[in-house]
Amino acid sequence: MESYTTDLVVVGAGAAGLLAAAAARRLGDQVIVVEASGRVGGSTTAGDGVTWLPANPIMIKAGAEDTPTEAAEYLTALLGDPAGANAAAQRAAFVKTAPKLARWLASSNVPLQVAKGVSDQHLLLPGAKASGRAIQAGPIDRRLLGETDSALARATGLMRDALARLPLPRRTATGGESLVAHLLHRAVANGVELWLDTPATALRTQGGRITAVVVDRDGVETEIIASRVLLAAGGFEADAGLRDEHLPLPTDTAWTSTAGTNYGDLLTMAEGIGAATTNLADAWWQPVMVTEGKAYPVREAMHYPHSLLVDAAGDRYIDETRPDYDLGSAMYDHSRGVRAVPSYLIVDNRHRQHCQLGPWNPGNTPRRAIEDGEITRANTLNDLAQATGLDRAGLLGTVVRFNNFAAKGTDSDFNRGLLDAAAKSKRKNASLGKIDKPPFWAVKIYPGDAGTKGGLVTDASWRVLRSDATVIEGLYACAGTAASIFAGTSPADGAALGESLVAAFLAATDQRSDRRREL
Ligand SMILES: Cc1cc2nc3c(=O)[nH]c(=O)nc-3n(C[C@H](O)[C@H](O)[C@H](O)COP(=O)(O)OP(=O)(O)OC[C@H]3O[C@@H](n4cnc5c(N)ncnc54)[C@H](O)[C@@H]3O)c2cc1C
Image (tube, rainbow, N blue to C red):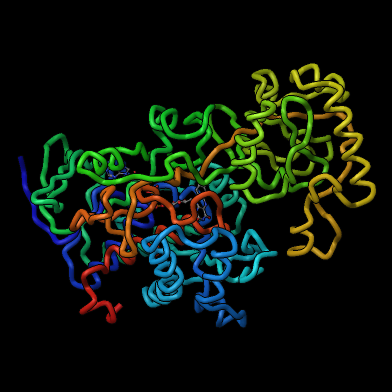
């Protein structure tokens, strides 16, 4: 077996792993990052890289007001008091570190800007903010990356399609890709070693502390001896067996919109050396449609007027414009009474002519998708119910009632669009519109995810804990590998990355209090 020695091994080269590597290197540590796939970026490159960092200096500079205390107030209103001292310390560490991390990113030449139109998701709660807490990296010219550019996963799916429509030079990276590009540049330029196509296959311990990570490097079992190891390898969203074991049923790997590279193997390895896990039934829920085996988030289509969501009985059961997390978990909750997995998004022809639906542009629904039953088209609602198997009387009654609400401008059942109207638009209920222009369309909606959310139990420095709350010395976890501190809800778009990056930063700089002020 080949053997190497370093200070810190980071497993997983998503945004969190790269940030940790760059931060530790800046403190003088030798760092090796091992990445199972041939590209860096993980799921971050699939999205727009919105990162929720309350009280960040970018929003303050733009004239907004916020403090860590207000952020803590919002989280308490949303999540309740933390369950125990460890949870309290983690939440406090998050709100305290978020502004510091944003400062560190800015000082590392990541050009941050406030993410437009992104508010906290529960605006009526005390401490919530209508804008500014979510930030994003501006564009980067990929030529700056030199040969490391080829390691950067290209934006995929919807993000790629959206990028293609922007007037940007071909080699410009934006969104999540830009964030990863900046972190990659920072890490590699400063001497972090990046081993691609190198999955971690085992964790070694001695006397209760981590001593090494074993990896498969070009088919050669290789040991990397280190006193600190950070698991930043995402969750288990791509593993069918673990999904079936832990997530609510039914579930399917086809419903995740992530890069599909995270199989939960590090979670299993850590459990094997005594690590505790929690909240494994939770995920960053996200309603999706599936076409040609791929999941596509449908938020825009759910917000657009002339649409509603029904269960198998043809009944609505939620405000379709609620946050993704709430919609996904409601699909499972509601399914206990009536089948709601899948639910159906019912739209009329105005919607199909003017709104993007997954990969399908407005006015363009592939014949193949109709033939394969991915979307159903009918000239009457009666025929639509028959073709989909939805309860006919239920669906017809629901649409009549909904159309009355649309005419009045108020959804008396679920207050659709009320928050949207309050936060984003002067027009009353911009998301309410009648469903009355044939042909009518129905597309199956599944409780998909942007990654799993349960994972290893960690402390306020994101050190991995055993079930008796003792620390596995030297072992840290972040990203989907560690359990989220936002169990059972989501405070805002960007919370997944915000939490991942804060955790990575704290893990990378733990035990370096002597030099932390240099960051
Ligand atoms: C379409 C989409 C849009 C999103 N948009 C946002 C957003 O705007 N804001 C937000 O907060 N969140 C968003 N998310 C969620 C967010 O992308 C993730 O929370 C975030 O990318 C996690 O980054 P990470 O570094 O923590 O993990 P990942 O990006 O998942 O990286 C984990 C890495 O570990 C590697 N790995 C796995 N197993 C091994 C192994 N055995 N050995 C070595 N390496 C391994 C993987 O290959 C991968 O590269 C989005 C997700 C999706 C799918």
